[in-house]
Image 1 (spheres, rainbow, N blue to C red):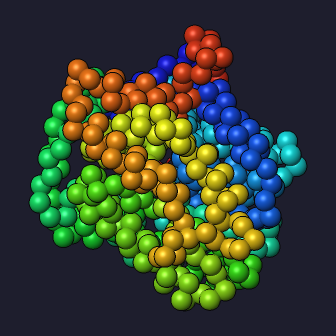
Image 2 (image 1 turned 120 degrees about the vertical axis):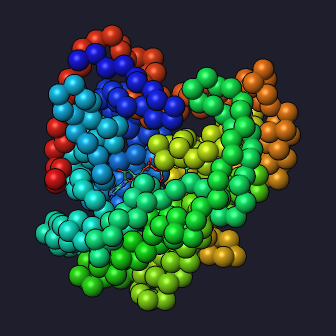
Length: 394
Ligand code: NAD
């Protein structure tokens, strides 16, 4: 079939297999150039198919030569529908790993469930023995917990309504958006989905099954961002969940003294998860412009390759701040970057959107996530949307 992008506001409902494969190969090439470190040998990547989780899996392979077991929740192609980008990304990742003679298997299913945890443990026992790294990189709209209750996350404030400039992604116009406060139930529900409970459940289950090596590392990804977005992000429902995740780091370290849990606070980037947050895409579009001009912009793979080679696996151990967090948002939060972002934020209007925002860069990243806008791919050609993944466990 001929596959074209079908964009609905902040989501694209199609994905291109060749473009997704190219994006994975580009990321692998970049990571490979950063050199090898003495890091993970066997890793479990929960949320392995897109964004930060995919980048982590690629760095585990390219910077450490590690065997990886991945967990994802993706859809394969059926009839007239393409697969999701994460499906095509994973097919290419498996091809790359197998080309190097390195183990890669992926479980496609709900990482929150007991059944998928048990399946992962069974596979680790059977194929790997133990893992020394667990990356927790889930971004999900809902979670069904062990008691069978389904919780949904929402993107709201936690006190007052919040009105701010926003980028209307349908027409690149600057509009105003009001985000309503969440109810207590909605805050709790978001914490249940995006907080640390499931991360701790995973580590408890892996530990109880004795499939973690001594001093195994587990890293979960968080975001804080600038004060500008605090009302909708860090002080909003999602930030409340992230603070819970951060607290879980200490709880895991206390409960399991031979596990080293750490939070990596990453840079804000366009991914399927972040494009859906109100107000934030405008901040990203301005941030991209400012950081590219300053020469310190990084994408997912640049962030994670720097994490693996300079902050996670170093001879002195983790490089953290005073709270014990690894700060990959160090460049984003530099005072000179944030000062400039604030100025642009105040000044930007629909007429000056291209002057202050990296709109093209934003959309380029967006289309690349779905495998589109690669100059060497002929998108007018018929392609087979059905792509098999060698080593998938359904
Ligand atoms: P993403 O949407 O690109 O990736 C989410 C991953 O989770 C995918 O692999 C998906 O298949 C998997 N997943 C979702 N629901 C699942 C389920 N029920 N079972 C199994 N797998 C499931 O998201 P991302 O932006 O890479 O986010 C990953 C983490 O990084 C999140 O915790 C996010 O908050 C954090 N983070 C993101 C940013 C950002 O700006 N994008 C910044 C800092 C931190």
